[in-house]
Amino acid sequence: MRCLSCHKLSISTFCETCQTNLLNPSVTKRTFGLLEVYSFFNYQHIEDLLLTKHTPQGYKLYRALARLSFRPFIKKFIENDPREIYVIGIDENIKSGYSHVALLTHEMRHKQVHIEHAKLMATNSVNYSGKTLQFRLENPREFEYKGKKDIEVILVDDIVTTGTTLKEASKTLERSGVEVLFALTLATVRE
Image 1 (cartoon, rainbow, N blue to C red):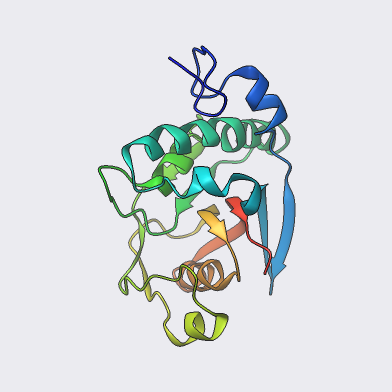
Image 2: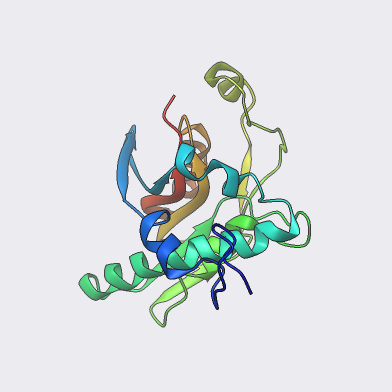
């Protein structure tokens, strides 16, 4: 197999050199109202990789990026916090054979971390890509939650731009008796 970045021979999707030099996660924090959102990458640095999300190659890329970022994060988090935590991905719709958000949440598996797949789904499938904040506010995703109540969760999405989707998802969960500790995203877009 070859590294998908530099094309050198590699056992992994990305060779160790590319993992270290190009794909070393650097956690940044943004706050939207009361919701804290932590992201691992700057969108502009990995944009070409993220644009593969609805392709067969995207499956490998998202899985590799999740292993480099979400997996180490949750391991460190539970070392410092012994309680049971739930993870909920936003709108884990399957397109092209997989859900890119489900790949992210799946890498957070651990004995004290419970993944709640496809429990928070949008009833409005509007596409926000490239849309203005005004458009996003006028066209809410209208989330429905069908999971456990009275739990503490980490909310997961792939990209945060304006925070509109994450805030709406967080409010839906809170109305359902779920406490959102914070949100994690693979990448952040600064507008």
